[in-house]
Structures are given as C-alpha cells and as structure tokens.
Amino acid sequence: RVLNKPRMVLYLAQLRAYSDLQRSTRFMYKMLPKYSDKQVVMIARAWGMASCWDPHLFFAISQRLLPCVERLTLSQLVVLVESFAGCQISHYELFAAVSAEVQRRMNKASRVESDVGVVRSQLLANLSEAFASVKCVDFAFLEMVSKHVRHSLATGGDVAPPAIAGHCQAFAKLRVHDVELFEAVWQHMLTHQYDYRPRDIAQILGASSVCMPAALWPEGSDVGQLLAPLLLHFDLLRVPDVAEVLKFCHTHAEDSSAAVDFVKQVAKRWPEKPLCRRHSFDIAGTLDIFSQHCPQEEKLFSMLCRNVHRLLRHYEPQDFVQTVSALARIDYRDGRVVHAMAKWISKRSDELSE
Image (tube, rainbow, N blue to C red):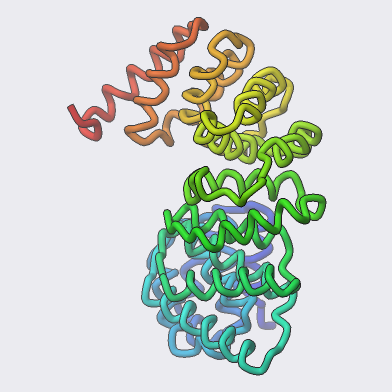
C-alpha cells in the first residue's frame, strides 16, 4: 500500500502536530524528484502553514520546481511563495521566476482582453503581500500590479476591496511610494465607501500614512467621513487594524481634527476590546501615539503595559526607545515593565547605538 505522504504532512500541519511533521522530513528528500508538482507544492504549504523553519527542505523544493514554474497554476504559485514567506525563508531566484511567470500571464490576459476576475485579483494581492513579507522588491512586478489596480478602478473592473487593501499593504511594507496608485484607491474608496469593510479602510489608511502625504489627498476628501464608520463598527476591527489607523491619524494630526478625535475615542474604547495572543502589532508605536495625545488614560496604559511583556522578545532597537519615551510622558507607572525592559536592554546592548 502506498501512503500519500504529501497529503499526510498537510494534515499534520493542520492538526499542529509539529514534532511528527519534523520527523517526516527525512522521507521527503528521497521522494521529492518522484512527486508531482502539485504534491511538492502541498509539502511546501504544510511547512509554511506550520512555520517550521527548514532551509534545506525548501532549497530542495526550489530546485525541484524552478525548471517547471510555467506548469504551475496561479494558485499554486501563490501558495508556494506564501509557504516560503510563512517560514521567513528567502529564495530570490525562485521569487524572480514566479514574478516573471505571473507578469507573462497577466500580459497575455491583457492582450486578449480577457477578464482577470475577482479570484485572480485576490490571488495577485496575496502574492504581493507574500513578496512584501520576505522583502522581495521587484519593481517590474509592482508596476504591473499598480497598472492592473488603476485600470480596474478606472474601468469598473472586478477588483475587490480586500484585494485593493492587500496591494496597499504590500506597497507600504516595501516602502514603495506609488502616488498614482494611492490617489486612485482613495478616489474609489471615497466614492464607493460602503463597498469597503472597516478592516479594508483601516489597512488602506495605515498604508497611506507611509506612502501618501496629506498634500496629495484628493480634493474635497473628508478624513472624518472615513473614520466615522470605523468608530461605528469598532468591534469588527482587529487590534492590528486599529494600530494601523492610529499611525495614519498620528501622521496627519496637524491636518485633520477628526484624526485627533479618533485617537481620543479609541483610547477610551480600546481597553474593552479583547486582545488575542495571536495578534501581533506595533505596540511600541501605539504606546508612543497614545502618550502624545491622551497621556491621562491610565486604564488604557495598564492594558498596554501588560502586553509589552509578551512582545518584548520581538522588539527592535528603535522599539525600546519608543517605549521608554512613551513611559516617560504618561502619568501611569508600572515598575514591572521598567524592570523587564532594563533586563532586555542590558541583554541586547550590543544592538543599540550609543
């Protein structure tokens, strides 16, 4: 009897049986040349879903799939890159091949005037986000994505708001300032606001804080018009989404009084929002923003300080500086946070500049 091991490891990843998944690695090396393309992508998906860092296995997968990238479907290409991104493994030769293949297919589709469709647009957004998470900057791919989104918005094409938000997030993560793209997205969002979920608006605003200065906002744009539904549907927003909107409001606080009011309203309602441990967000930047606009909210800072302990091991050097500056501004005092930060700073002192 032949056991379908690629399907088995995918089930192990879904069941979070990580030790069993890692023990099955030794069987994969021998069988990779014999597996079909679909099965190899399934193996990569299993390891990416479990975030099991195995560079040797992923190198073998890349060598197996590089010669046959053109045979993979678009969804398989997206799953492949997402799997590498899920394990934080970069293989830029494979990424370049995937990018070139996707561009070839999109150019072919545009020449025959075929409809890209909502599904393909969402897959393209997933691919953009996967490239952004591994810091793969392919300007040809990003230009193609920008033209596709702008054309779809101008002609009323089938591009879904979640896909638009995903593309904006990818451009922001890579620090690619495509003003024409964000102008088109803002104009569409202001015109068809009720088609956008609160989460989509939050992600687009967070990306705009990086890629679009206030001087380039569309004429007649009212920030309060976009922030009002976010307060109305505050319970539908995840904590990372709220943190993205706060960055936008802080960046444009001098240009819009509605942005400052939003920060103060969020400061009062945030402590009531449950925080899932799986959610990771820029807690140092959030502390810094709240400390500048509403330093008297002790209940809010008590909740945030409790979560600083959980995220200290993920801190970058600038995060320590932001957190210390924020704690110095507020009236609330938490000796445990100060003690924990002092230990971590002394432990990672070689990473900090003088």
